[in-house]
Length: 454
Ligand SMILES: Nc1nc2c(c(=O)[nH]1)N(C=O)[C@@H](CNc1ccc(C(=O)N[C@@H](CCC(=O)O)C(=O)O)cc1)CN2
Ligand SMILES: Nc1nc2c(ncn2[C@@H]2O[C@H](COP(=O)(O)OP(=O)(O)OP(=O)(O)O)[C@@H](O)[C@H]2O)c(=O)[nH]1
Ligand SMILES: [Mg+2]
Image: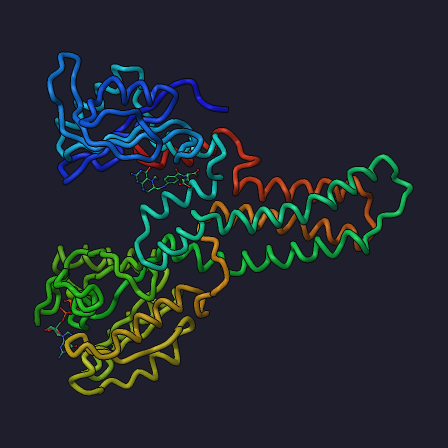
């Protein structure tokens, strides 16, 4: 089970920091500790005990003053013996300490290889390994807490109980395949399957929301020149990111920045005001605005509320008809002079409208809530366990389809060997999430997304 070779890598970001950590995992870890570190106090390397000392090179020269911890496997992150050397966070001490570990029997780790070992050694399952990456990459507190739940094994426990509910019926029908003339006792086998089906449906029901929380979404701000797009962008970001002037046509190029709206990382795309123009640069900008619009998950259509609605506004609104749209009347502090009813009545994909003032800050929180709710499918955030990874969602969908087949098979009295195939398929699909049944190539793909030292 354990690997024969020892891996080493920089576990902290390259560059300068207060402390930098070299991590070593594998059977040579203890020998490397003994060879390269001279502890101040006498004694042996005890697991989970930090020691003070110096890293010395082959000539006995001090390479760095360090703290170091040894973790005796299997009670460690990877399940193997691990050594962590906490150096000063500069490139030279770190590079030289890493070289010494390599000189004493370690090899350089590949991206994600520590986590791969934790998985291969049964310390964490695949969903937990993927969750460590989600923890690192989380963009909102909500995303972080979902990732931590998954890292702690929340999803894994649900999946394990699902599998167990399917195992007994599978074993039963598999045994029956040798005696096809026997009756299937479906009154005994159906309830656990139906229970599993209901849990699966629950997981799937929240998955679309979960994926949005993890991956975020794109919202394009479109409207006439001077409608107040860049001002709203800045107000939502709480920084002066985009240039704002009273001159129409200020924004020339599209500008993207992520804002946290109701726990969802939303990429806001500020665009050039859409207008008929002879200016070459502005025309290209308008083209880009249209392109941004066509790629957005949600359109924020801005109308200058301080002026009467114009034909240009109506023409731009036309362009948004194919996308879910929130209508925003801007500059509410100047009074509401635009009658938006002709526009909103004609819009087939309008999800709501709101008056705001970027300058006074009114309506912004509510707009954030509206955007988040739209991106979550028009529903409040589910408080059930949220599956956040599209790979997991896909596997759950396949498991669900197979399980529905199996249940239908029981109800219609289909041959047991067909039911066995469906149940087997459902169990295998669930196993893809936790990694029990997963192709080697997929594993490589998943772990290669990790950084070196993770
Ligand atoms: N210095 C340091 N900090 C770190 C990590 C690390 O590897 N090193 N981690 C790495 O990503 C994370 C912590 N993850 C960890 C997960 C499991 C174990 C571990 O040794 N588990 C033991 C339980 C120990 C105990 O019960 O006392 C076990 O599972 O048996 C350690 C770290 C974040 N912080
Ligand atoms: N009173 C008031 N003025 C605003 C508000 N929002 C924007 N403005 C003003 O409207 C003008 C245009 O604002 P921008 O945010 O640059 O408008 P834009 O839609 O990005 O314009 P283009 O980039 O030219 O397409 C500026 O003078 C802003 O100060 C608001 O909430 N209240
Ligand atoms: Mg602008």
